[in-house]
Length: 192
Image 1 (spheres, rainbow, N blue to C red):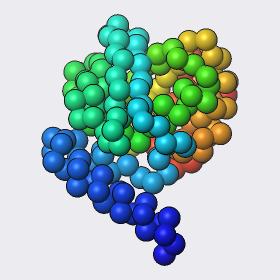
Image 2 (image 1 turned 90 degrees about the vertical axis):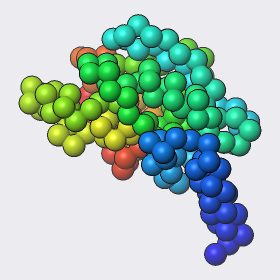
Image 3 (image 1 turned 120 degrees about the vertical axis):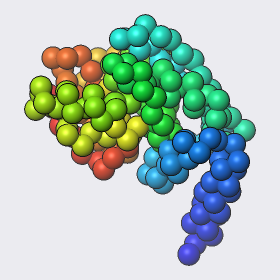
Image 4 (image 1 turned 180 degrees about the vertical axis):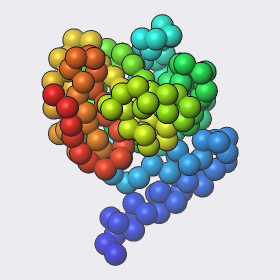
């Protein structure tokens, strides 16, 4: 094991121990973000802004500061990205926030993400999957690992290309519906 790998492993262990004492139990699985979800650069603070198109809610949140995720900010983001049809709140993978942070930086934007869909409860997902072949029956939205977005001032194709360049999960473009899907699952792409 090289020194860099050893130090990275020790850092993840320390982060996990710190997170265990600072984050409610329901959010713990989300804090164990896979290594591929690590941000491309180290920054002291990571912030995101959202406008949920179905609820009208807006949020600006600094979810990472002083070397750790902020439990209160994660909770606020989870609430805004809840299943808007049922009100059910899910624990969103912080790796998805890191991906969105890096995506916004790559696109050179300070605009809030327009959110079409964040977390989706199993009941909602089953209903949508029964109506459309475009909805996966085992969607990563149900695991808090996917989000459907647009970014004001950027074409969908620009958002898609920037997400593909990050190579940190799935990227789908839904041009007719006006959004790009990004997730922290395996690297893959679809849509036109």
